Amino acid sequence: EPEVTQTPSHQVTQMGQEVILRCVPISNHLYFYWYRQILGQKVEFLVSFYNNEISEKSEIFDDQFSVERPDGSNFTLKIRSTKLEDSAMYFCASREDRVNEQFFGPGTRLTVL
Amino acid sequence: GEDVEQSLFLSVREGDSSVINCTYTDSSSTYLYWYKQEPGAGLQLLTYIFSNMDMKQDQRLTVLLNKKDKHLSLRIADTQTGDSAIYFCAGQKGYQKVTFGTGTKLQVIP
Image 1 (cartoon, rainbow over the protein chains, first blue to last red):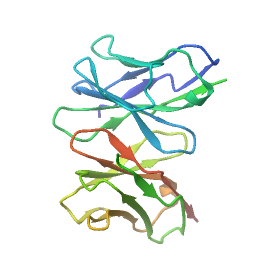
Image 2 (cartoon, rainbow over the protein chains, first blue to last red):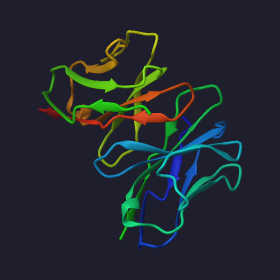
Image 3 (spheres, rainbow over the protein chains, first blue to last red):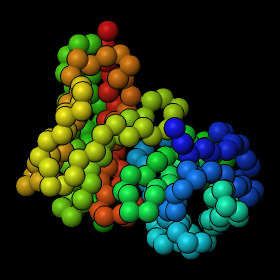
Image 4 (spheres, chains in turn purple, yellow):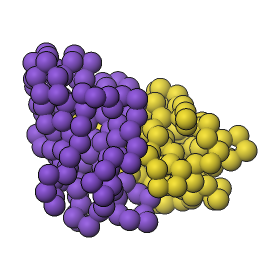
């Protein structure tokens, strides 16, 4: 069964460093999302992406964040200068056109020291 | 925006039924979901219900939706230790972002 994959599973970085979290959505999906979950808290929407553009973003998704689909298979989330409070589990999701269900990846745990 | 609330913790004995409750604020949510998250793992979609339905049953899972009270529940029959996890209620309007609840940690006592 097709699934969303994410790499790495765990990323440790120093405060102020740039990180890139990678996702490979399901191949025929056209809509892509990033969510995050700070430890012990709810899963929060960050951004949605379609047709090489951001279609919606939350207040969390400030200028330090960017997303890109650099090729036909990857979808990335970049954090330019990480802060301690960026430590969280980051989930990628994707969905088909005209289908509601978003399929979630296993997540990348980001730890900022 | 949508706000989704759940009780934080539920403890049940193996073999009993579990009922996890959720309230939401946005009555225009068209899809309501239940996700399961095991420790250190991702989000597994368990089941969903359309807003025009009152109930959906899927094997051991029963979802009840009370639109008037904006209340959603998930009943797990014959709860097993493997059901121990965090359960998230979530709402979605059309094709938009999914808004998650705070999560309910289900502990199943053998």
